[in-house]
Amino acid sequence: MIGSRIRTRSAVIATVAAAVLLAACSSTGGKQNADKQTGVPAGKASTARITIAMITHAVPGDTFWNIIRKGATAAAQKDNIDFQYYNDPDATKEAQLIQAAIDKKVDGIAVTDPDTPALSAEIKKAVAAGIPVSMFNAGGPDALGLGAIGYFGQSEVSAGIAAGKKIVAAGGKNILCVIQTQGQQQLVDRCNGVKTGASGAKVTSIYVNGADDSAVSTGIQAKLTQDKSIDWVLTLAAPIALDAVKSVKNAGSSAKIGTFDTNKELVSAIQGGSIAFAIDQQPYLQGYEALDSIWLYINNGNTLGGGQPVATGPAFIDNSNIAAVAKYAANGTR
View 1: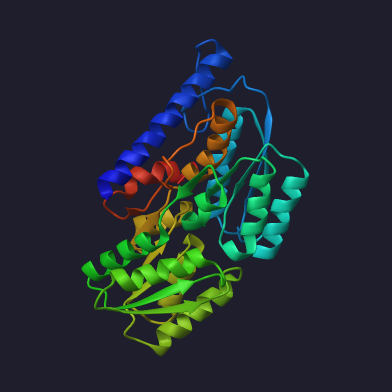
View 2: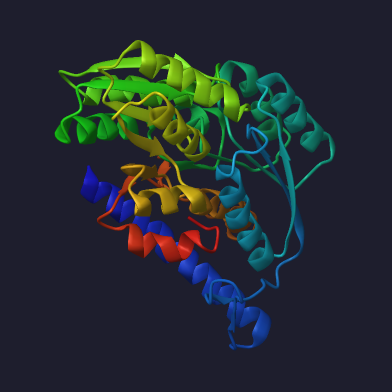
């Protein structure tokens, strides 16, 4: 399984590298200009300008989505794309945003799907209207069946299983899995995966209001105070993990903390030892490929993944490899 993921990821990277090189050469006559922020050679495609709408279920203030947008912006700049971004954590309102993009007759739609029953009709409408749809981050099991040209993300169940196994291997026996938004299947899948992976350990899930840092800290702290035997807190987003650090301290708990996803502050917390690990699903790559895959499809009929979702994770970040990640986190791309 690991070998297959490596081969799939390598194929994606090779395709992206080739596209970048082609775009750079076509727009600069072979001279490549380095991006001022990352130093990566970059150029602009000479293909006709197209409009792509990216629509997500992002909660305002969640820094994870800033990394998604940076990846999408990089692809848009390279591919001569008019990139339009919209988000709403309410699935009904996200569906309305998809319909609005259809009505605008955009050239492509990149969308997350945290709630297939609420979003499938609009996604299918976009496909029926002849608009190429790429999906990413959430909705992987349903994406290709809805007509998407590709899906970019991680298997949330598999990622949860890996997290559960890692925690048990570190001696964890009582795990608190913190879900920050109700009604999003991918978050439930993560905690369910933890229960499978953490065989022999107790796993309890709680819901907190991820849009309110104070409520998150208070909710986790209350659970830690109630059950002193909790020895691991696993959160599903970087900002929630940072709130959990306060909760553990205020509860007088010795519980360790792991999380899904990263941001600059989370990387610093791993370096400082207050958070043990993060699961990286490479959001920059998700945002980049969500747009770039549509450009490739429109301009050359290409699709990625061979009829299967393209895995961008999971990969663990901990004290063994944090130094290698930190320089990219400083750019806001990891």
